[in-house]
Length: 484
Ligand code: ADP
Image (cartoon, rainbow, N blue to C red; front, side, top):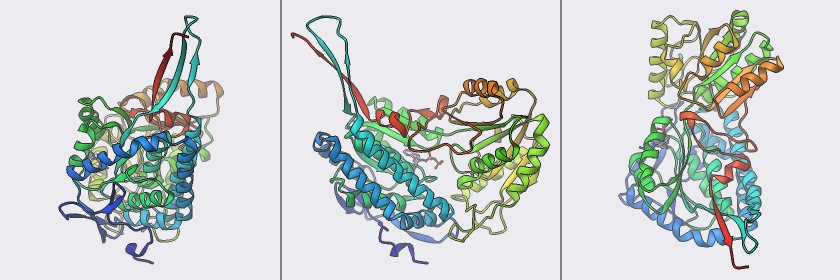
């Protein structure tokens, strides 16, 4: 296998104002492979000064970028899409090296990431306005859409490439410019994506990327008045903090925060389909997604049968280095993630949960963890309230539809929910009663570029993807034309 440094798209500098550069201080931070612990390389430790330069560059680049006909911006995004797909293998390998997910999943994420560039290249051409019948004969009322302006994006490590295109795609298509701060665990995927943006013809200053300490860079991105919008994906705790920091300059916000997804299996569900859906939803990315099933609620009549089938499927999962053929579960991102999973498991065990399979660190060592199923989980356990973000599937027992709905909604989160059943009346009732932004009905996977992704309650603000995604980067401007 090639060393990461030998990949054509490997970049270990930041891109600010059209130039690949190092931190002013010359300092660098190391990035590690979570499967082996080996150091993959280093990236610049940038701070306030470099972030400010990137913001100033974005402001200077804005007038020309927003003035381009949508077709021209679209052509650049389309080329970016094509380059990402052309380099799918390299990008996937960089991702597996720094993030740990199996190579097949990484390839899938690159295609998913690319799809947002293709989609928004097209949506950018369809930023329509309105004409409104006037209340008087001598005026005409018109609505046009303006790009918001300079945007900041802060992205997480669990989808190192897709989170960038979900944000930069619609922003650039709408005519905004952007400064990006990727997660410190996965900067090489971000830098490689930006390299392809440059090759596609994104002009200097339109998209810059800075790496370094989150609080320092985030502080500048959220306090600088030139930045008109922050788009963030990450934890609810950090989202709250950033929202507070944005208050002083009244920035627009899109927040994709944590989830606590219920996955409900009703008595009339197709149990094999429910097991397949639960496996997809729970174990994708080793349980490290904000839409992963966090609480599997199973109706009394099928609880034992579901627990048995599901546990057998989980025992088949192959754990290992993401580069090894056939591996389905990579390592967790870092040791803190493993310790968090262990804390949840200790709490659940103390409160009466039973381990059906797994339950401890994997013999492979490092941050590998056994895929785990817990029976007899109850709402007083920490796993019922917090995002697990690991390969642990707790099963809860319920009796009635009303009980399932009230358990499902008993959380501050409202991102994704899933349920399996066949009764058409119940499908409508439950779909409407769930307080969630996304509901999978007999479906364990639902995110794609054509549909709106986002949460309600403390899971966030705004939507990504779909025709709604571009609206997040547009302002409505009302023109009242009088004196006709
Ligand atoms: P996680 O716990 O999954 O790492 P975080 O919300 O901490 O989630 O991280 C998501 C992104 O937010 C990362 O890019 C991280 O560096 C960034 N981040 C974390 N804390 C701050 C902060 N105080 N200001 C700005 N960005 C932050």
